[in-house]
Length: 398
Ligand code: FAD
Ligand code: SF4
Image (tube, rainbow, N blue to C red; front, side, top):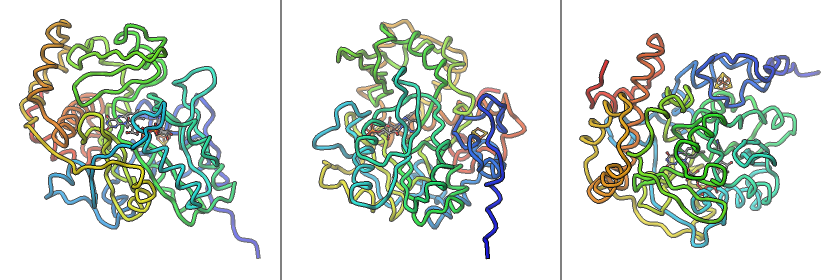
């Protein structure tokens, strides 16, 4: 008896450059580059917001909207600040993500790891791969701060016959992955996520670097850090910092991808384990363990980490409320004023989890306004209840 082929095998991936079902809201997650496109209406993060169902499926429960930490950071059973005793040279932070992936592979928990390297010609051009050696995982370290089609390798997963897989990715990629994970032929899927916000196309990245850095062509790494500055690292090892309040908001307003302007999954709510930085003190990474699968991954590297409990200090509300009209009007401060403001806010401003809430509030209010003005018909269904709860604390302009 021959088993019937799953229906997606007969579907055809979209050609490169062909319009995507989510149109301008597409985050180029790679899903439509595969035959899984058959499920796109259900799976695409920008066509079908389904957090409650996917949280239930992934974590066995939905986030508790009566608990502030769950409203903000999603379902979790543990949170901590951590850093590697011996950071990985050239990683985005201390390399916890790459270290977990390497242990998962070398200890035989998985046969492959979906991650994203860069092309030979361009250090910021993403090249998704299924890594099967520690060297290939290490070659994917550091952020490619651009939209990345990580899911474009999903077809290869099913065809390779792999049964145990780790996927590293950002929220929109993980939402689509979760929607089809039972169709990949896997026995076990592990999902290691990073938070993600304000991503850009490769052209948008160039504009950001040119407007913000003193030497755009030599930037190898950058991050919006907890000290309210963007830190650029250059090829020669030098560091450049630019205060958030000195960014040329008027020129940068249209640089972020429309997908990221309408995203409410900053903290990657469907990953098993999330590794970021924004809920941790400066210099530390921030870990959110969502379920037992996440704990299993973290256990593999605990002996390589220093850890400390998460902390929270300050009150973000006034700063967020004031920043809403300032961003809306594209206000840019002169550099001396921006530096001064940065110093003051660094001293008395929100820290730890309160900094993370500051960043989430600022982005969710901005994104809510963007959606309301540009896609009002999507507003109600696309904005999840937890985000509506967060946004409702603030007064928004029309
Ligand atoms: P590394 O060991 O250096 O590994 C990095 C991993 O990221 C690699 O495995 C690679 O496959 C993957 N990766 C790189 N680029 C992409 C991409 N474009 N899409 C999907 N996967 C990718 N954290 C916060 O706390 N707040 C933020 O606002 C925030 N914004 C981010 C924005 C973007 C676009 C990205 C990609 C990440 C962001 N992060 C944010 C996560 C943070 O910057 C670090 O990636 C995370 O802390 C892991 O650091 P690491 O040293 O352990 O990673
Ligand atoms: Fe397809 Fe992903 Fe774009 Fe949605 S975001 S249209 S699933 S490529």
